[in-house]
Length: 396
Image (cartoon, rainbow, N blue to C red; front, side, top):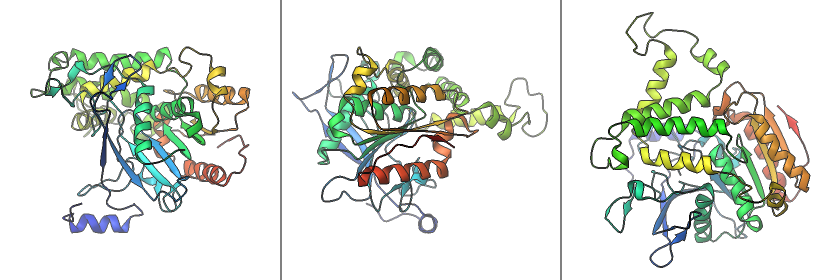
């Protein structure tokens, strides 16, 4: 790892409670004649997963926690990359003394299959053509993502995970881990998530996909080496951001305030909330691939943990303890969907704790309600790690 990080950035990191400078690693598998078989029946390989680890794996290999990211996340969950001004996306939850205390736990986070931050996806080079896959990349599912992660966990020499945890799409992966590999998961923390996508959730994703595909620069997914479909992807991200917030949080953050006073700019971004959406849309196109957005949102829509069985049959096989966290103002993944997870857990006799946090942040709360989540996660993980029973159910 290079040591040329700027002095001022290094001083900033040292003054924070972050893990410091970390680096992303890469694991490649499913090479020729051993490709990964996807749910669609297609075979894909070789595959690379980008991942980061924090803390140390104990001698018994019983302290591994797998962090699973949401739609636009990546492997960089904590610490700083060299030269970065901001740490990983869940830095406040991972590290010394934090919810996922790296003095006790070995924390792993990988970029999902289909992603665009180091893992194999539609922007990766197709070994058959030596060009980016584009739409030649096969359809993927949450189950495919989890199956790929299982190869990484095998590579790390871990037989059983202490916990799988994630918010939103990360929560779906956590549920799928428990269902696909029940013997390999001791506990699950699904946050602000669902057992299957609702028609409304599918509808929002479809509007975002159509915005991308309506951009003339998308060119049927063959834009690599040419002009990026920035306008379409930016609009898709703007739609997403609206669903991540709540009416209350938008009112508190923006009100009806104008940018630089009340100026009639003929459909420019006059209101502060408009400027916010434009800013995040423009920033997103600098770090995310448009085709990956299409593939990953479709994987979200395909998700249904029952997968041809009854939920009762699926959960009867699960052996993990559950901590289910939801947020009262989340209208993208409303609390009734988390309560459905609790209901089926109780029906089959799984130890499950349900916590509903009274937050005004909407769906974004899983990234922002750090103090409350830290309290809940610390308490739950300590009990699981030490073998105690978990029986509480309460709201915050």
